[in-house]
Image (tube, rainbow, N blue to C red; front, side, top):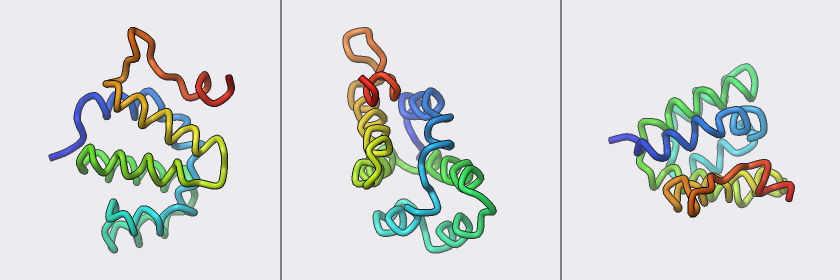
Amino acid sequence: MGLSDNIQDIIKENYKAIISDVPFKDILIDLRIECILTDNEFTQLDQCKDNKYAGFEFLQILRSRSDADFFKFCDVLKSSTVKHIQCLGRTLENSASDNGQAQGESYSYLTLCFN
């Protein structure tokens, strides 16, 4: 199993925003509740020295999961109290739902969030 090529491409395109902006240490419990993480993975990420490293480790784990888990991750982001994290979740979800394209236009996190 593993993420589809399309979703892996979406993660690559948005990698910097995901790693830099997502407060992984703050959403670990939500990721566990949604069964995206196992107990061991939760503990592993909780022990990461900083948020960016936790994000890097999480994306490694997510790559071995199903597309459904990616959409659960998007839902966790969309439920954030921080607007730009909600927007990132919508951007990722929209890109994956539209197979990365909307009539020849790719979704951009910055375009969707700040226009």
